[in-house]
Structure formats: structure tokens, C-alpha cells
Image (cartoon, rainbow, N blue to C red):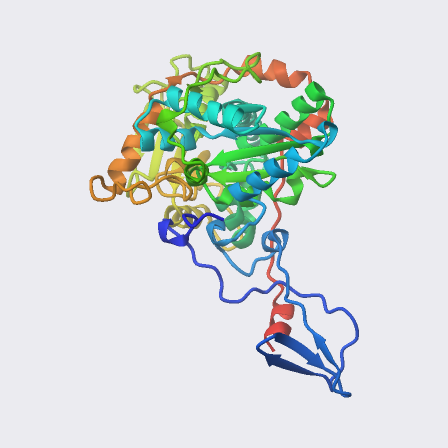
Length: 481
């Protein structure tokens, strides 16, 4: 992986455990009379007759890490060989030597946060940045399509609002474990919840992240367009966060061994790809906007209102106020109050009705705030308080949210650390992100689009589940002994 993918650029990082407790299967017979010998050539097992057998190193896969609670860590510390721009180079090289029927169709998407970070680095507009990246991927590199993930986000926001309404109405009927509804788009937060707070899991939204929804839809669409099996469609996702590499490798995000997202690279790795070819994005021509999903979403670059982490709270607040309380004022300043709790990464939004508070929601960024939030939600050990106070929380593991993801460009990376502070840089990237036209989700349009899917595809493409990962103490003790 790239030299720039290092822990020195991380924020709010939780260090990994010193001991990996993944149980190792012992193959073959063992004897108490055998001994282990170590020399400069490696490790050997010696039996009673003096016969040596070289011991193979233990292999820990990414799937092992995902199913183990030995560490609580951001995925930035995990070296993922198949999730790097070098892997993309390998696939491109392999493709050249294959006959046409066996070649993979390459498609890339970029998150709005990554696009804004790159635009800031090259002092370009969002639109120009996207057009130049489109040229780079489809003209210089052999990609068939280059899109953004806003279509996947549009679907995710629509489904999330539907889930919130269902849960709210269920709670009003007396059903338990409904609210607060917690967002599911941040894999760092999901990993933390699965490994340390199993009682939180029922409250996390079952809607997949925009990355995973986009991957599933892209492969389905291109299967039909090109008449090729999904294993011959290689989908690359450009993300602001290393944890997205982990997310793409969850077993539930694959079909018959073929992943919905084949490779995730970070914003910084895109710059490495340009440098590797001695290219300056400012000198690359602009290409027209990709039309892959132009029938379903505006061909121009459109962002959703609200935060630069996806606008989840803004959409839920607006949608639910209209759907539940018939408020057609679009939740303007007169009926929504925002309170800053401690710092800007913990903000509370209160929707007031004529006589009382009707909805209370929050934005919670950074692990310190997440830990405080979890403590607030818990009334007693292993239970969530029904009086926790919030109906919905937009949660992201990175301070300042996705715009400040661990894989984003930083002033020190692009040589600006002496002229601009980190906060000033984040403010500038946010400003560029907000410069795009803002449009709310077209719920009717999206619902009509999804209506054409069969139920099995809808379930696989849009929803996921979570699992509590418990540490196996007995096996850990045996290993350490």
C-alpha cells in the first residue's frame, strides 16, 4: 500500500490490542516430546527422532479480523493487500493479456467528500474536478464508467427515512427497541458497536451505506447491459476513510463469493495514482459527465442538504416532520432549535410543535463523543434507556465527520502545513463541498425505481444485519499459556 497510508495522519485513533486472540486450528498430530527450534532460517518442529519440519507462519485474513473481538481499532491499522491502488494496477495489467470475453469491465465511483478534498488540493471547482477525474479514469485508465456515489446515497436516505417512520410508529404503539435510530453508514462506528456494545445493535439502521448500495446496483445494471456475470465486473470505490476497505470485505456484502465492491481506495491513493504517472490533475482535460444513472438522478453534480457526512439528520428531520406532523414549512428556523453540546461535533436538533417538543435528534462525530453518547443511552448495564432523549442520531467515527476521514488529503500531505491550519483546511474543503447545488431526496422518484425490483434483490441490495462479536476467553488463555 502507499507510504501515505500511515497512522501518523490519523485522528482520534484507538490503538489495536497487543494480543491477537484469533484461535488457530492445529492441523495434524502433536506430541509432548516434540520441540520447537528457532534459527536464522525460521521456525522448526523437532520430533523425538530429530527430524525437522518447518513451521509455516500463521495467516490472519481480513475476515478473521472482522469476526474477532481481540482488538478495537480503526481499520487504518490493517494492511489490506487487495484494497489498494496497486491492486487496481494489477487488474489493469492482467486485463490486457486476456481475451475479450474474459476481460473485466472496470467502473469507479467517488464519494462527494473525496471529490471535495481533491478539489481543494488542486484549487479547482467541484464540477471541474469531477470532469478531470472522469477523463483520467476513462481516457487515461481503461475504466468504462466514472460516477459518484450520490445515487446510492439518494437511495440510502430514502430507505433510512422509511425505516425511521416505521420505527417511530411502532414505538407509539408500545413496541420496544425501536428508537433512537442510529445511522449505519460509518464502518468504524459499526465495528466498535459490534465488538463492545451488543445492546446497541438493535437500534442501528439496517440500511446499507451508499458505497455498498452503489456497488450492488452497479453490478446488477452492468450485468444486464454487457451480458457478463458479476465476477467480470470490477468495481472500485474512492472513499475518504480507510474503514471503507473493511466494510467492503464484510462477508454479507458478497454474492456467491463475488463482492459488491471489489476494491476501495482512499482520496490520498488517487493522488498517488496521478503521481505514479507524473500527472497533474490541473493539466488533464475535462470529460463529460457519465450518463450511467442519468435516467434516475440529475446528470449534474448534486449534493443533499445538511452535513458534509451525507445529510442524514437533515433529511430525516425534514421528511419525518412532514410525514408525521404534516409540517410543510420544511423545518425552518422557527420550529427547529440547534444546541451545541460541548463542541461542534456534538449537536442537538429539537423540533418543536405548538405545545411541546415532538422530535429530538443529534449529530455525534468522533469516538470520544460516541463513547459519551453510548453512556447516555444506557440506563443500566446491557440495556438502552427508553428515556434516552434522542429519536435519531447521525454518527460518524471521525472528528468533523467524513470530510475529515483518515484517507482524506491533509495540509501536511500536500505541503501546506506551514500556511494553513488543519481546521482552516477542513473549513475550506467543507466550503467546496457546499458549493454544489443542493437538492432534497426525490422520494417518489426513488420509490418508483425500487418498485421495479424483485423483493429478493431489494433485500440484498439495500439492507444488512449486524452481529455481536464476543471474545473467546478460553481459547485466548490456552494460546497465551
